[in-house]
Amino acid sequence: LVGGGRDPVLADSLPFLVNPWRRRRAKIARRCSAVAERWSVYGTCRRGAMPRPGTEATTTTTSGCEADCGVPAMKATLMMMSCRSRSRSGRAHWMLLLFCLLLAFPSHGPRAVEAFPGGYGINYGRIANNIPSPDKVVQLLRASKIRNVKIYDSDHSVLDAFKGSGLNLVIAIPNELVKDFAANESRSIDWLNENVQPYLPQTRIVGITVGNEVLGGQDTSLAEPLVQAVKNVYNGLKKFHLQDKIELFTPHSEAVFATSYPPSACVFKEDVMVYMKPLLDFFQQIGSPFYVNAYPFLAYISDPEHIDINYALFKPNPGIVDPNTSLHYDNMFDAQIDAAYAALQAAGYRDMEVRVAETGWASSGDQTEAGASVENARTYNFNLRKRLFLRKGTPLKPKRPVKAYIFALFNENSKPGPSSERHYGLFNADGRIAYDIGYEGLLPSSAPSYFLSLRKIQAGGWIVHYSATVILSVFIFLALVT
Image (cartoon, rainbow, N blue to C red; front, side):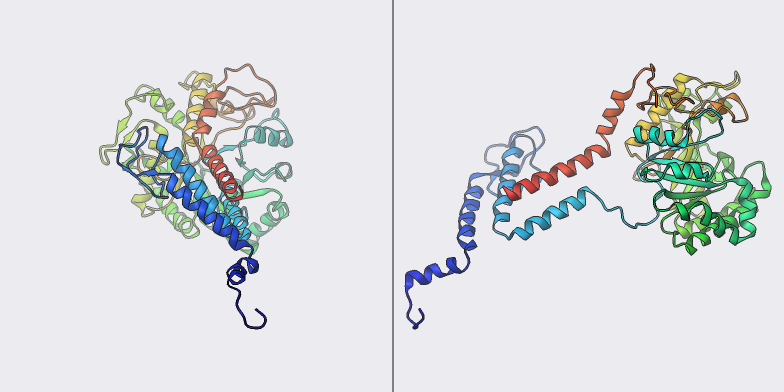
């Protein structure tokens, strides 16, 4: 060879000497060919049925094959994947594995504003003198796997307790500060510098509410300054570069609507719309949802003779049909949300999302508060939790999953008003469950268990999809390396 001669045997062997992987690739190619000849995929498969004679076709396509015929098809696919992957470099294995891991474990880096991941949250009110400390509350929330929490102030003991917890926290600027924040933008900056900036990122502050049920409320003097207060807080967030990390909103009561039945006929009150329109204009500009406090319980106790309690509790009932849209509603909760959507559409905000800032059912009340009982509270909150876990939309917005904060975490013994106001809690003051909808309290309870049912709910929700992604990633990796 050095002298220019050619040894045919050595020349034919030279490629394998130069590239020792080529011999292995040739062997793998022969194996892949054998696999392709051995395994057939049936092109007319359907669930639960064997393929009809004469319908098989030798192919590596497995789309749509299930049941009995899917087993060899999937095996063939995995073997082909294994064969083909072995003929590539080891670097490709690790790149594909990394891609699978990225799908299974999404990034938690910077993102657009999303104050409400998932669909279930809880309101942590503290108008009580006998509830657990914030540190104990964090333990309770984590044990119950409730990760979205909303409070009604910016108490530093709560902000400190939530550090490093991984829980998403929405804090609040109370109604009594609305005028002050509207009058002076520097007041918003000072508040953010004191209550937000020092706690990030250890405390996951994901949202700020400006006031609560201001429009349509008893103090009409707050209506006009509300929108300016919201704008000043947003400008403060921009100064700290937090406008894309913290969502800004204000919850509304049902009192802002002129009518809510049927849902499609819902519109804002004329006197409210004067202040609501500039607020909605601004929220549309910054991408904030419309938050409403939706209480089927309050609607029911206002007219128990004409409202079917089963309709309010998510229990089987005939439901109603909206005569304008022909949409059927089997529960009042969905009807209240779609009523809010209808009001927004009538006002020109068709694409704005509706979320629920508060909803719940009292476990006790005065004699005039029909339906306030432990059994009804358990039924409502159990069925509501089941409904939210399924990530379903409403009849009007079926592709937009409903998100709601439950009211409330604890029974608050110092709240003013009717007796029901002090009995909305899922937990008692000592940390025990008030009634069982699948949670475990800080202390054991003898309440009847619904936990197995909720495990089935979770099994049908995001847990299955997440687990399936991880398992599929493992199978693909094993197919590549074996």
